[in-house]
Image 1 (cartoon, rainbow, N blue to C red):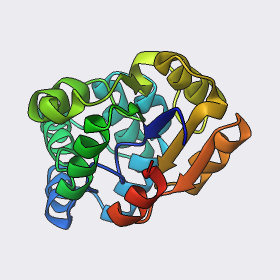
Image 2 (tube, helix red, strand yellow):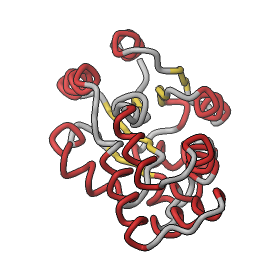
Image 3 (cartoon, one colour):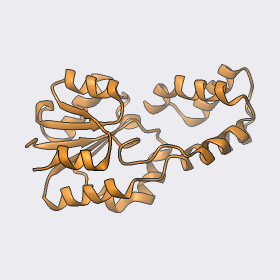
Length: 198
């Protein structure tokens, strides 16, 4: 049994953006959707590592060849934050079960700074199950940077080899394995339950 279980947040516990949420962002931006989302994801890594929101959206605008007004940027930030706050009840239930077994739990998330207080206010009760919350925006590095995994293990007080890491992105899983963690690609709550069974 691993001494600690380290979870990704988005795509594992938190749900992806819905089509309606994405359309809202597209409507506010007023640019061609494919170009918008290409820029949105291509420029996300510095944002996850702590770049201010207004700078990120200005960079997105520059990438797609437009300029967003400050009002548009504020609306984009608000819509983007709202699009990332839904969670999977089955995963929240699993976290409660694991916490009840006194398992050591950690969270390692690529998350922007403005989203942290929004997410914590909405989901504080189950986030309290974690022994350590490691956010990319707070540590200045994002997965799959090896340092992110090492810091998460340090926050839990264990060696990387003592961690089971679960993430929905293969590149992050491979990077976690490179630092010595046991790591698996997330597919479903039932699979996660099997992986974490003690």
